[in-house]
Image 1 (cartoon, rainbow, N blue to C red):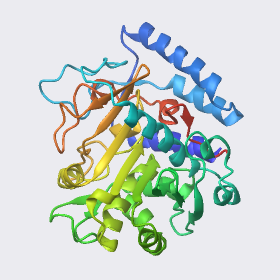
Image 2: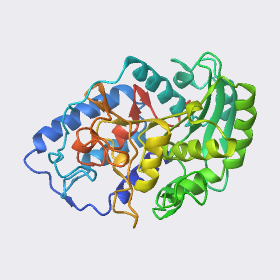
Image 3: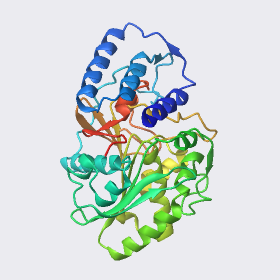
Image 4: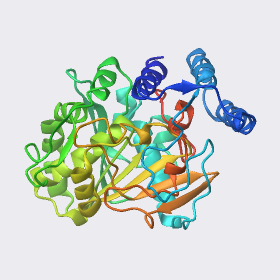
Length: 360
């Protein structure tokens, strides 16, 4: 129940500056798309009473009256309810395979039975390409309720650090700390003027030394293994900060680090986003009309919020590589930016046939 309520409250408050209004003549098309999505969810997601409530609230949500995506360029067509098929190439098969595996790695962080994580017996997320993960240490802090896990996979030759998204009350509180703090004061390798979300930093910092100690031992023990960071929602934001910080703390070369994220919110200001774009190997997956990648909105902090590049946009079952129209601080206007930021938490909980939630 905590997952549904926390996610729903986050979105409703995050969109508080967008006034609601009755749906325009496109309502029939939107209703048909919504019904189709609901049918898909009922077929794929364990339907608990809490999920029934979430679906009902989602269907009652209104579209914003300033129906424009918050990240489009002046030359981009206006956003719509359903968006448009991107004029971009599909991603390579290897990228699709990686995303399918890492969606499971990210979803495994939601497992509420920690012993199942340690033994890597957490159900579907411990299968489907993630088999053989071992040496698992659970991240579980008390102050800011940072949750996740770290492990090694010899078949993939990877060291994995995975962060969980919003699930508990303190996560929700931290999500709403929209003020920014100096990133360069906390991670000296970042440029002066780079800032990131205060709540995201505080949450990550709660487990910083635990992660550092565990990683230091493994990167030395497995010198040929790359270090992969992943997460969903809040966890995606944490993985970006963790990748940059642990690279600095451990002196790791950029070639040894990769980030694959799902439903990632904007993490910092344009200076921060530009640094991430130019210095990290990162893939940012956006599923259909997931609302979380549209928040925080660019004007919710004095120095602004912006996304880094490397968006992979899932539209009608196809994954599009959205780099062509992007810059280091501006999203490709033909991908997720073509959709209105609707209150669709169901879309936020899905990626690559994986459901993010507290079952394992």
